[in-house]
Image 1: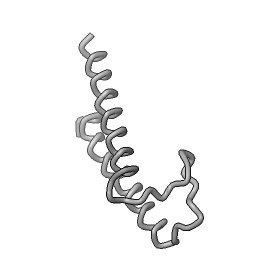
Image 2: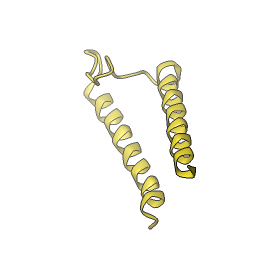
Image 3: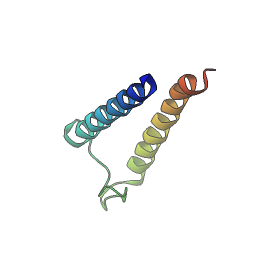
Length: 75
């Protein structure tokens, strides 16, 4: 019972964070480099901007995995 409530609260928290990040990117100070939800680049995006956005996305993913690894594997 407790683990189910914990899992639901984690899923709910990640859903809220995901929505907040999408809204920040869409309406925030950054230009959204994606054309659609499949991740295809717009025609007017420069190669430098693609590299920067890919670095930010991959870096944040690695950071998230490293933070969650502590909680999942208890290392």
